[in-house]
Amino acid sequence: MVFGQESNQYQVNAERIGRLSFSIGMYRPPSEGGSASLLLRITENCPWNNCTFCEMYKGNRFGYRKVEDIKSDIDTVKALCDEIFTVSEKSGQEGKVTGDVLRALLNADPILNENPCFMTVFHWLYSGGKTAFLQDADSMIMRPHEFIEVLKYLRTMLSSLTRVTSYTRSKTLSQRKPKELEEIRKAGLDRLHVGLETGDDELLGIVRKGVTSAELIEGGQKAMAAGFQLSEYWMPDLGGRERWQQHAKNTARVLNAINPHYIRSRPFVPRCGTPIYDDYEQEKLHVSSPHERLEELRVMIEDLNVTSRVCFDHNMNSWANERGGPLFHRDYEGYKFPEEKPHVLELIQEGLALDESRHNDIKKLIALNSL
Ligand code: SF4
Image 1: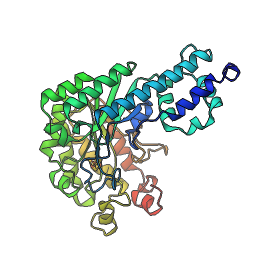
Image 2 (image 1 turned 135 degrees about the vertical axis):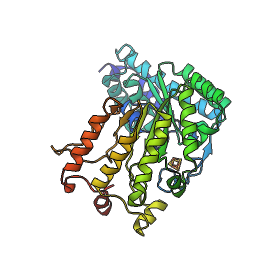
Image 3 (image 1 turned 90 degrees about the vertical axis):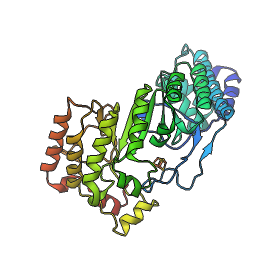
Image 4 (image 1 turned 120 degrees about the horizontal axis):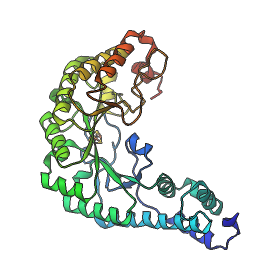
């Protein structure tokens, strides 16, 4: 093979590639995995870290990263790209990032296969090098002028990017000035993923979300006005049997006021190690049955008056249809409202008409420890 027949130059480069590392966090939305986004950590963990249902960053302190450190990570990604392109040229692939390029690199150093930085950059380039996701939980917490500096640097150094996205909190969005958000948007941040969870003030307080429904609306509306593409995530059954109706009604109310581009369903799961799991175990909170969850969904969807795309792009949307397949399709673009709202309501009706035993029951899954 051309690669193996070349001098040690390739070997040396493979060793260098193995040493090039940058910070990658644990979490990204599923849709960013679908687009093989480049993952770059611009803050560490969650500055709030109090939500009772969330296990993501528990036990880890929030870290505010220096701009120079983030820029250095971007330089490292660029260096990795350059090395991969060089191997592509030298192995006859004319700068294209192909399976043959990967094979050539792994022949030179099989350990690269276990190197998360290299593999992240390779997969990103292999998929076109178009999208990046900035980790961790609340990028808008960065001082606006520093965030803008990072974004401009990122866009300059990695010019193939066509979309840059991140997580943020509604509370932080509500505290930013419209002009700051506009400048961040113009500097190159395109899409925001926001955990709304519920629009019900009582429930927001119970789960210690650290935000009011008025702030959810203010943050969401500001993001939309600044030109971001906005994904809001809500959590069916977060209120359990005790508060399902107020949860459904107020979530629809808040989402109607925001009218985000995407509304994404993330059904509630009491995760071991979270405060809400203790409430569940002590029977202070009763999760709903599959039919009760669908009934909650029906109330929420009926009240939705939006032009958003409503998505069920997570495997916890585990209701079955008549044929035993998933009730809702799982793709990242979901159902266009209002056009497909009647269809979604029909699907809910189909799920309700099935015997309840045909659906996955969250309580059984928890008891089987299969979550
Ligand atoms: S703000 Fe998000 S990441 Fe932070 S604790 Fe709450 S749900 Fe978890």
